[in-house]
Image (cartoon, rainbow, N blue to C red; front, side):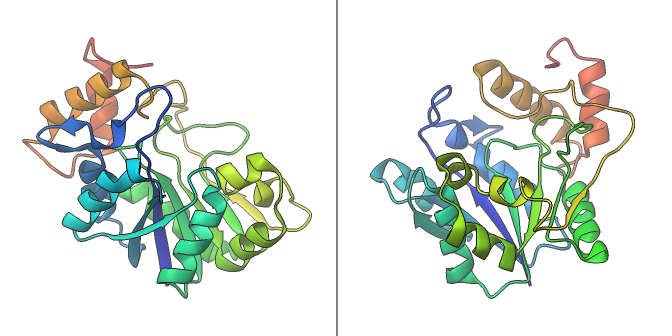
Length: 232
C-alpha cells in the first residue's frame, strides 16, 4: 500500500492561513486534494496537521472533504508523519507532499512512485542536487522502514522538522533515486509562500480550470509564458 501524506498548517510565517485561502471558490488545500485524488499510485491520502487549536480549521475542512486526518506535533513533522503511518498503515511506502503546492502534478507524482517501486530504492524525489521541475511540484517517496529509522534515530531539529533529511543525508545507509526532466524549469515558482504566489495560482485556476479541471503542468507552463502574471 502506498500512503500519501499531505502536511499542512495554518501558521505559515510569510503567509498565515494560506492553506485555506480561497482559490476559485474553494480552500486552496481542497484544490490540491482534488488534484492528488487523480494519482493512480497513491492508495490512501492522509492530511497531517498539528494538534494546535489554530489548525482545527484545517482538520475540519479535510474531514468535510472526506479526507483522513492525523494530528501531531507542530514542529516535529517527522513524528507527525510517523504517527500518520502508524494510524493509517501498514504501508510499503509513504509519499510526502506539502499543502502549499496547489498545482501538484498527479502524473509526476505517479512517475516518482513508479521510479521508487521499479528501482527498489529506499527514497526517491524529483528534487536532486540539480532541480529541473518548478518549485511547487516537489514530491518525495520513502520506504516505510526508512521513515521508521529516521523517526527512531533522528535527533537533529532540522531533520525532525523537514522529515526526510535524515534519509537523503545518508547515502551510505539508504539507496537514493532521483527524477529529472528536460527542459529545466527550475526557475518557475508555483509554490505558495508569498501573496504574489497566491495571485499566480488564482490566475492559473481562473484561466484553466473552467475549461479543464484536470489541467496539466504543460498547460501551466504555456499560460506562464503568455501571461504577465507569470511568477519566475
